[in-house]
Image (tube, rainbow, N blue to C red; front, top):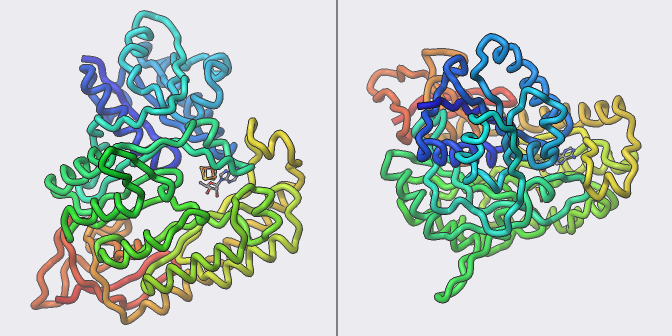
Length: 446
Ligand code: 5AD
Ligand code: SF4
């Protein structure tokens, strides 16, 4: 039996896809291994969202060459967004790569690997309008047995001007809700206590049957009804489609987590228009108000891009102002990276010098750091229900878990006398006693 080692870069969707790939290959008779030295094939699931993500993969592929020189059997395949974007060009440029396989052709991996075993090199990069891998039960790779991702849709056709995803992941399509609910139920039955429903824009999830339609709020409701002890999260929401109906469903189900990731990208209307985001700052703030009205204890997180085409200092200041108004609990902050094939690549200049992009990015990072710390200070003294996940990365004496808002709480493994110790995979009440910008420190309470 040949052994396959899977390595994943990029977003949560890629991690979910690697689990589908693992399942397909196991079904085809391959063994999945966790030691690269033993592998016959290494599959690198890649991200193309920014140039630095691609450079990291290129670097890794060259590093793997050294291993191949020592062990001649090892063959390398590139999966995911970079495979789709570069296709066979990638094999020309990286001569130690044996095959590339895009995100919609993973079912063909067994044939691809067979071809490679016969000494051929091959590329499978066709995009599909229907593939959702709905019937495949993913193997859980590197799982803690407590939380898992469930992919509910694939692709994106919002065509934000800067973004390569519509070209690497194809048209948007939703997965049959019954298969989603079944997957969540199976996970719950196996002891999992948290599922995250994934899509590029979950708010446009839509499934039609003879009995009617299932939209995202309805899907969330069905998953939430599996059991009150199953936490349900989701990512990502495009602000233009965040509906009151979803907020109502969230309010009605306490096990749907109080955390909404709402990528804003910029605080300037001119930038938002140029980015083709299809909302204004006013609309966005209206959605934030709605979240706070329906779910007063909900955390809000975001993505932002510094230094997009023609961004002026006023545009940049507008982003800082928006951060001060919303007071995000967490933000993923990026420098604009020009991507081949996008609208911006065809029509807009990448005209902000790199050091100026860095300066603006650092300003946003510093501001967000202050806000996160101030937000966390307000948490001191509060009590939360925490899903215990495991040992703290810093200390064996401590455990960590998350609250519904997705904030990490760290607490002593051995609680004060009279209080039972915490067990991973269970819920416990934790009182916040102090904090940093990234973490809440606390103690178990009964
Ligand atoms: N440059 C920088 N950041 C980008 N993102 C998407 N495309 C680019 C790009 N070309 C960011 C957006 C998106 C997140 C997943 O990555 O903020 O929400
Ligand atoms: Fe990219 Fe925009 Fe689609 Fe998100 S919504 S994946 S940023 S095109």
